[in-house]
Image 1 (cartoon, helix red, strand yellow):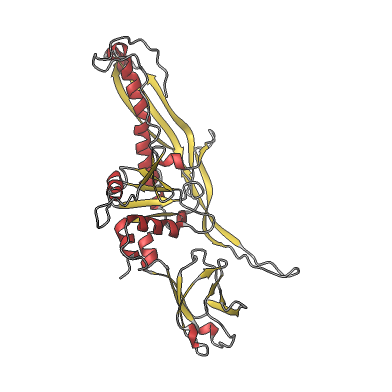
Image 2 (cartoon, rainbow, N blue to C red):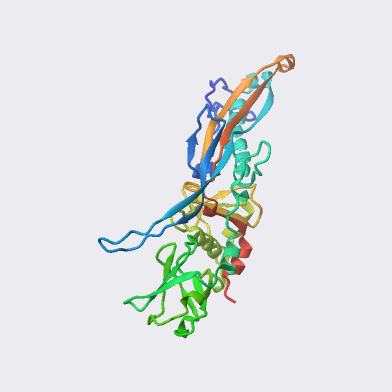
Length: 383
């Protein structure tokens, strides 16, 4: 990060003075910005407006050569974000700096880590008021996975099902009157209201085809006359599905909920104490379950890297697509400078200043999840 002339020749045994001036920075520790799309800011723009997706209809179907292609759509709303400044300063004795040049290296290599720590909190939890960023978890639409798994995700009222179609493979294609992009494979639908083919009044696994249609394993005869009166309730297929689940099972459930369409989680943020709890889990015989793996100095749960962040509450989780769901704009990249004024000169001191200016648009809040790990564990546990 910095280059300082080596002027220290004292023996290694003498306190901390060595011939090595610049201390090594631990580059293995992940921060949230390391997993985000970091873009360059426009010096002339102190704020930006961007389009946030709040609904989409991926109505992709198979048609004949001269058939009409189905229409898909995206719905946006305009959002704004302003430049926010993050930084600190420290007064240093000039006599100390001259006598111990390693002190300069020691301080300057650590100040950027302090800024990144504050930046992590702002990215996650900034309330958007005053000089704070608007953190991802504060946006409407960020999932609480346990509620998604255990509750009824969608209730289909009369008229919500527009058609049922027989297939040659013994399945039934259900087409909805309105698109819903959050219905995913292996959810379960409980249908009611069928009066002719009463076998439809049961619970089926969903095999998603598009945002408007899915298949169920039912050999439909095409005789139901009360389709418009049929109702349904859709739940996650993961509810109560795992025998004796552990925290890795709960985290994999989070990943599964967040995998939809073009969005897929690339980060998992936990408090270091939570990572410790997960990494020390044992089976009934006392053997390590090895729920946390390490590769190249980085920790993973499943295939996703873990960001250990003290800003995250113990037992809480945050996960999401940090590449496509949001971005971090460096209006002014982190920089370090020294400054003197009359007061510091009178005290034979100098001031070191470190700061950055950033903006953070969040394009798709649904691509993120935040909540309690124990709630997810309870939601997937088989009764």
